[in-house]
Length: 475
Image (cartoon, rainbow, N blue to C red; front, side, top):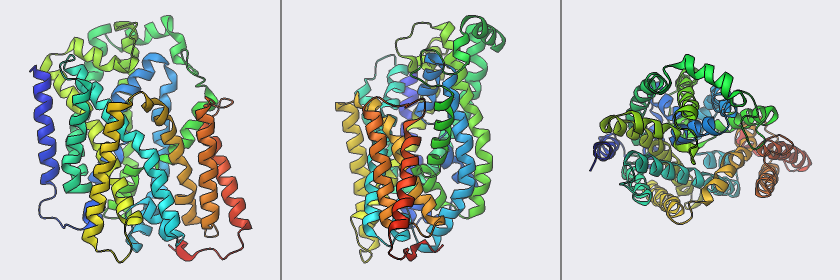
């Protein structure tokens, strides 16, 4: 066993132990498991919300897009900035509504807002469909990280199973609190590793950032402007529409909503949203490393391996192992929250009734959490090639829940029929455009087209629906 693999193995055992330790002396009910009894302080909320900033995609995809396309990858930092602004406004609203009515998920919120179990079930099903590819994305991302740092000694399949076991190992017992505690370890390592790589790799391979920028301007200028180098239509229209779409979607993504509902106060959410842009600055590092790889390792068949290829060539085994642990935890933390969110939605909104005992709701939530992980693991092992097609739909599909969940709390005349009709219409448009290869369409993100149609149908149907607006909107 090489040093990198040994360090990784120890770290995964420590991760499970830390996650389990976090549950000591805590309550055993669904409220504690799913939203930590709404007792997370600013730091824990900040770390959970930051989970969307640094996932395994940040280590692989951000560097890979920089390597393949160049400038379009800057949408990542731009949309997060917009997302944090939306979260500053929306987070306290969802927290207040959730705390007042004892709600634990977006499906729960939708069911209560429209006084309709059917609406809650529809939201739970839609969110699950859009989330499962993201869980699979994290499993496969971790597999690539482990296989790369081990020099191929650990197969992708074994790494997939490890990712599944570690995430399930603590989240089934500790719930959201376990994810929050593990995120402390994850983010401490991420910050240390990213800062080190930002200084070391460009200097090691090119002599510094001055040489990198000079060579980019003179040798690779197309990487510095939109739509980038041989990108699939990622121009200015796509950039702006994607930043808007993803920024809004960020506010209802599962780790974000879990962070909102688990917070101790609305002010904790506001403070976290104000601090988060500083964290996203770190995303410029894998982007710069991807650009460095253009000159250090030209001709890579898989650009997503740019960062770890440079790291493996420049670092000793033990240091590469630490980088791998940071990348792995960046997959495990968001994956655990995604699975927890699916379990919470189904365990309370779909598979149980109001009168169902809390202990039964929790057991069913844990069972669904396990099933969601098994499905994502099976997808990774059996149909890994489907990931690219499915992951494209995830964010654009999840965006279609935004009007129902967010606007529904502000616009009291929105009806259940209007909300569901809008969700259905927007989702059909997105699936049709992506499925036929029309994303972007006329240079615009297909998700924003679906969202516009979603809103139009929602408003039209709600206004035409002459039944009284449902009273659940009272905040």
